[in-house]
Image 1 (tube, rainbow, N blue to C red):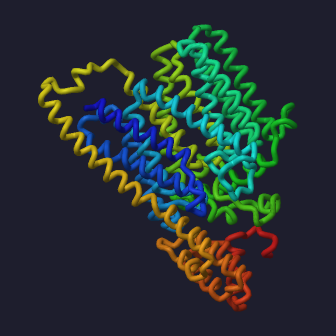
Image 2 (image 1 turned 90 degrees about the horizontal axis):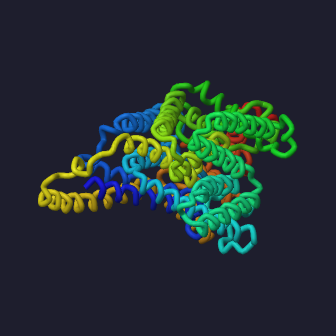
Length: 559
């Protein structure tokens, strides 16, 4: 029964990763990337939860007690933040537009981590690596089509065209870098045969070329870090302590020079430095300001963007201009600390510490080179490197959280050989009847899990669909109705008001903005829209400017 349950959970996790990575909806939603991925993630996460709950008697939960409690505390604290943080409850639950990394998304990620830890056997790990390589291949080939200007989808994309299925060249670059790490680990496995090894090396070269077309260095950087991890494991397996030590020292020196070069310091600065690094520093400082000023609950889940103008420095305001803002700290640790306070960050760091402890235990048990574990570990380290310099994009985040669960579970599930007889009933007739019963209840659980996932995750997708349909209809009443879909979405209301104003429907636009600023008084864009609309009274304009100054105190245009 345990094997059946593990297989089912493993399949749901794998298909969840596939769907969350590949699904896009440019034909149906205004945001073609995030709502559909958030929905797929929600379905996968709550389906796993339902299967685990129904089959809890047949899963060795005691072995996973610590990660279960830690995960439960992480979710519980997010709920506490939702209640007490000053941000909009709706935004905290569903996440900000363009990100959708609110309570539902993070809950699903935590569930998938726990689910992966329960089923992390060698077979699943190997399958997971091949699936990741396949997803990288599909994303890479699609990126090559985009580079060749033969993309079948007409994206409204202000970035480099090579965005893959993730909506941004940085995310595409990072995902391909992670896939390259896994492909490299398997390419040195002689048991696969020379043909497969050559194919994997060729694939790596192709994906590295696509990374280059993104004009994003993230993919190369995390590929290098992941390969260094694999190289260390390989040298370590040869039991050459001196060579291992020299390898570690040289690798650390190389990483230090790379980091300094990225910060416009040292001999590689001219090659590695980009102005975006300076901007990231501004985002990080703003994230730390939010954290230090709101140490207990943060500013609210996925609410960094709402508070960014207030938290950024005067230098950051002027550096790129006051109208250039961001919705994320470009560092997952700072995102969590600013959104949920020091406690949420501490719980996340405990999860990472649990993964690291599992890694050390696995390495202590065996000095043999395990190609599958090398691929998993290299990819995990690569993802963590990416998370320090970038956004927790849903299509990337699912891989990082599942990899964490696989490492934790693999350590637990390989602590000792467990007899199959001890996991099953000795009575074959009783076992068969129980399997039939569990099968029926598990089927019902999957249905309930899918229903729960859809119910919780559908709102951003539904709202984005309705707004796109309304805009395509060019009917003013339909567009206005889309602004008032429940629960109210401030970004959607702002967009509707802007469109109405552009089409000389100033009165209607002002009405939407009045309702918006009443429901979301911390919406800078709402007050900005009101200040610039012709039909606003002088009192409304004065109030709007005062609110804008409150929300953007370093803006020189508001002095």
